[in-house]
Length: 323
Image (cartoon, rainbow, N blue to C red; front, side, top):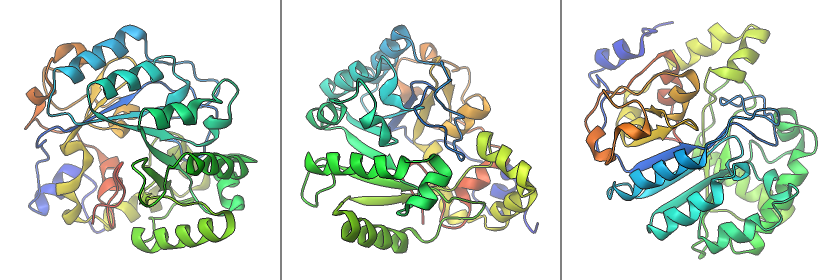
């Protein structure tokens, strides 16, 4: 590998380190690891058998801090399947009453789960922005990564969302799709792939959406185990390191985002959360340690080798490619 494996050293070597926060504008909340799917690439290691979920008390504290942090304009709710957490709907309602944007990171098939028949209507009524996982526009690739029958259910869910106005060109109901590679390689150019998705989903199923976001698979948790089983871990890490792109650093999500775990602990990003790498800012370690998240502006960001996943090639964040 031609670049240093130490991410901090790579930043310094390219004159873009050390990594520190700018101004925090996004609060990302992982409300639990329970999910109706068990995807091969899942960095959360979520699944139907996981029982970790955010308590009502922790959710209430998250909303209290959100209310006291006027610069936080976006609440980004993730999981697991976040919609299956008991606190999900009240968290959404409360954030919307505070006039904050809300993103629901949705796996689509949850819309078809028993007891969730009104979920799409709820999301539309609350003007929640949906960021939906769809790793390919072919059934073969989606089902290989996410389970048999997932593609068909995902298409049905997308049609339901479209029928409510989600993803329509002039609609305020935002629907973005998320692509993850099905193997140990970097995503193709986001703009090119978006055009392919738009053509395939439109022509075959009549589905429309606003944007496609490409996200690199992180070498952690379930995907890391898959890399180890196939003997590709070293090669994939080398791919990430050797494609380090310093131009992606200014746009890294950890610079303007704080991540909260289901137990209230704070992290610099969702990936650090899954690795249990504590937030770089001290002495803040839980949501009870801060009142206004602006107190974390300018703080150091905790990094590790996995951070090469966000800075490889065109870069990767919860908002897609960075350059």
